[in-house]
Image (cartoon, rainbow, N blue to C red):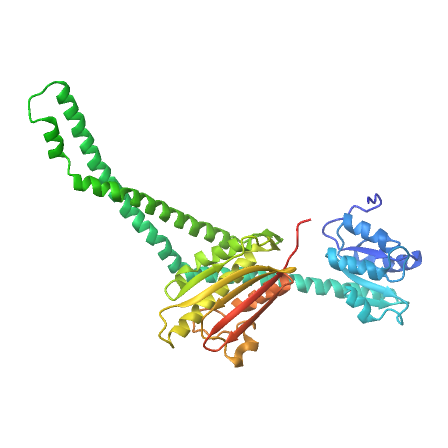
Length: 418
């Protein structure tokens, strides 16, 4: 639905939509706010207001509750579900519409009619102040998460370098072998060409078969015929491994966009496993039980990459600690993905030492860690919880048993493409 009466907004100013079916109330609120330089737009009922909100961004909606067509409660619910605006509700029927009712619908504040201009202005300024604090907190969270991401990469850099250097070494060895073999084959071809020319010219000398037999070392040729294809295959495999590591690093280290996009979580997990390989390959077998039919998740992939990497590294450290206490040669880390109803679940399990009872309630606290100095700041699980719960409206929990291991469960809401 189009609304041709929308004002042209200045993007630097706060935008407020006033919704009330009584013109005097709309004017009262506008007179209180206009001296502050806010840009004001009006709607006479919830239906008109929602139409306007779909066409233009507003910071705050100030709405009455009892209105024709669509009432304020329904409007508040729609805004909470679909739009980023904060809502201040107005009502004179406090006996019917309590604070809990209005805030439960999605409003952030409410004011009781009748009210003075100063009261509504105070509420607006409080909402704007809270919004600014949230934005500052979100900015700090993003900066902290990005810092922690590069801290993780810094700690893993030696292992990543090793994972790249190993295939580079056997690529170099295989290329040198192929080069030497080609030189040997080239010499044989040159001799054969020479013999062919001599035969055409009827040059005197030993018989042609004898010359070929004396020239060719059949053992060397058989060896080259057997080993050269292997060397080529190993070289191509090494190139693929390096390419996968570089791609995973690129996907992981990219600062990322702030908006959510549909993302293949299985690929995110594979990238995290590749990057962290040197942290677990000597002490644990990593099993990926990934549902290939898993729907894409509507998420911020950069943030979830960090979560998956932290959980894998933590699992590796837990297994390493447990191996110091028993005689097992290796532990196990398992990552499983599946669709559970309206959720996507990622489970990261390890056969580590488990989480002691006295610290279970603390593991998601910022800066809490039981690791030795240099093995982390204690931000990994705190950031994981913030990313999953606050940023993605999901769930993160764990099950643990002393001496047997721990499983972390991440559940993200399944949002289908329209």
